[in-house]
Image (cartoon, rainbow, N blue to C red; front, side, top):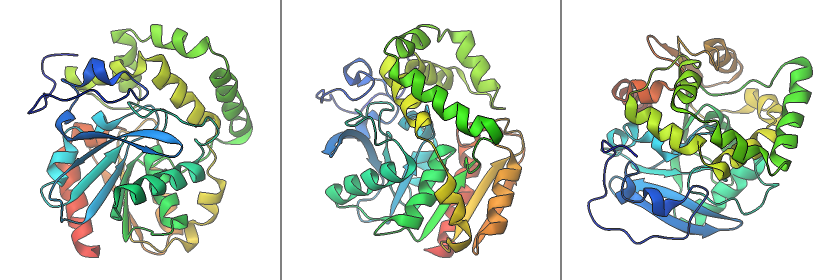
Amino acid sequence: MPAGCRRPSRPRSTPEAGGVDWARYAETWPNAEHSAFAQARPHRWHVQALGPAAAPVLLLLHGAGGATHSWRDLAPLLARRWRVVAPDLPGHGFTRLGALQRSSLDLMAADLETLLEKRGERPAAIVGHSAGGALALRMAQIAGSPPAAVVGINAALDNFDGAAGFLFPMMAKALALNPLVAPTMARLAQPNTVQRLIEGTGSRLDDLGLALYRACVSDARHVDGTLTMMAQWRLDRLRAALSRTAVPTLLLAAEGDRAVSPETSERAARKMPRAEAVTLPGVGHLAHEEAPEEVAARVDAFLKRHL
């Protein structure tokens, strides 16, 4: 990991490893001084929590293939006003997947609620990026303690169309079940490959941002967790309930996003009773990493109106 990574302010003991080996990155992972590990059935979770302990809880959910590093700059900005809680999703980052068949949208929502209950936290609002945006909305629909507001950043709210909707999850499942696939894919994660993948989403990251994604993509357990999530990814129930999802929702879309079209957010907002879509110019799919100050300002302004 490059020297530019933030270091924790004090030495840290090494908890049991999650997906990626925590012992390898404990001293260099962004915001590591705010990291903790918790067992909440069935997973062993890596969670970062920062901001005033008495402030309203703001849950941050990263996208498929990401981890808490995705919030490295946005989380401290939001933590000036909110109690920010950011877990690694099951099988991602340092969260150890405890059950292979619990990576679907509804089951991840249920397991996140279990984690939050164990930690004694009730989110006032949820911010989700890409697949995390879909997860945030699903939690608003089915959670026993739903949030009062949701923000989606390039929220992935469309299923694959046509035959791809059937074939892609099947392919991901086949890959996830093959023990040789994840290590092979991880070994292929060369520096220029990761950069091309990121730029293919319409985003440009600095060297640190690229190095963090490279650390994840080069880890077979993280790759396996991502494939497992993709294999179980279906949005039919979420999409069918959008017209009944009355939680105030801000859908931030990036003009340059090549992974999730801005029209996805616009269509979803039109279906929802209290949603608005805003397009951000000059950024791509990882808008919150490219322009954290602007995204933080948008999130703060929206939440002030609704909390």
